Image (cartoon, rainbow, N blue to C red; front, top):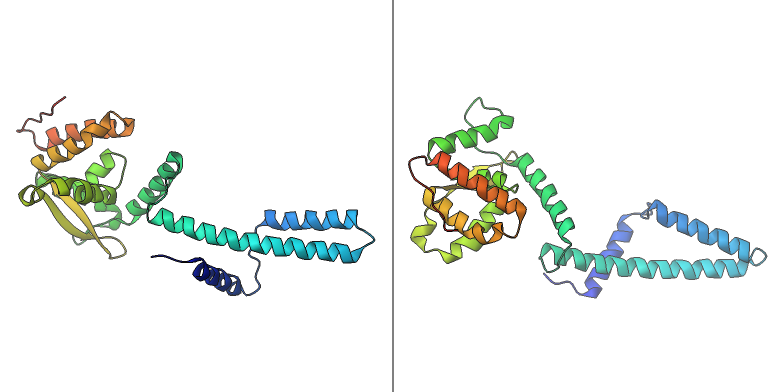
Length: 234
């Protein structure tokens, strides 16, 4: 969705009118105004006309900067949502951690009767391990990530390189979170796990966190499929 400058200015106008006269500026901004007024009073104490003109020019300049900041901030926020900007790595890590914490707080499943929501993780894992599979949620935990990110990797990065039969190795299960909204969790058999590991292999030499998750997943594969030997090329 594209917004031209005139439309964003209309949004800014609606934002200002929506405050209905309530304060919309930070304490720091108010302090700067007080300092400016004090400066004018000290420099032109005997000339109220000059003080008022300077104050009016300062406020006009401030409004222009506020509107311009609103426009640029809006465009930048839209670019972030569309992943069209390169954010600093530290900021990306912080955003991902916050998103992971938020998602983990709401992810859930269709629970058996009598099972409390806080017990949902153990229910998911117990059921999946009994079925001799590993879930995308488990993989997310191994890589210090989220189920949603693993699902996106499977669908957007791994599936395009697989034929339809190979895609069937990843079984999609629809569940519901605590807000009763549907979520997807993939169940992986041994072959699917090997495909996932192969996809992650080039990245393990670049990132320590991925190398750690990679090793943990190898161990989980061997524990989950004990009669089948896991062999990966060096």
